[in-house]
Length: 320
Image (cartoon, rainbow, N blue to C red; front, side, top):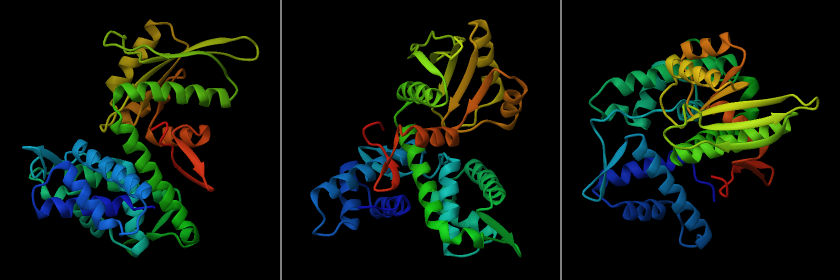
């Protein structure tokens, strides 16, 4: 039973606006809006988990909060926004027809709830993300701009369902990963990178997280050896955040790698890097940045966190 994330999100908003409700009641009412009387218990249980995950995402993003054991919509806190969610929703909107940038902004303001907050900070963040996503999708040839309106590129129309599906999967994957917290992400990224390095010619001899507040800025270490016997010690910093990674953070990590005499450094984040941070990473040859987009690609390649079922990729619930 496949239910669109967007539909669940909107139903949750609708139910909260009808009156105060506890988390359990909200899940029951939302599931009741979607399920039919003959829905099998397994599908109903799976849907309850999906609705719960969306509610958790909305709490983390500041869209809803708990007041006296009831969930309420926030009207003052800025909404935390993510590029992959913005990307997915833009494709969903353009599937309905061409839209101007202003129309896209207006629709996404309502969808994400930035129009219901008192601050302009989240609006500006949303506008910035929209610009980044439109530029990226245009560069990739997924969408095109004609007479002031964005539309799905004609040559991509036949595959738009596949594009929409993979973008939706990416958004759900990053959201699920983000909701697991920092400690989980450290273990996940060390394991994922180990699998990725192994698939790409390295022999991993050891991989572990360092743990603790006194880790010196190094969250994980992977030791490898190649066919000629050259050994490397790869040091990892893992940040499970919404915010962009800034240059000072990357410089601090690079300094920690050099101080510990690591061979290479990998700064992994579920979000992305500020342009100045990206420029710094490009200026050095033994440290790289891995963003949410790359993590998603590696998860697919390594089938870790993502699996293929009936010919389609989906979240691996046993891992995430």
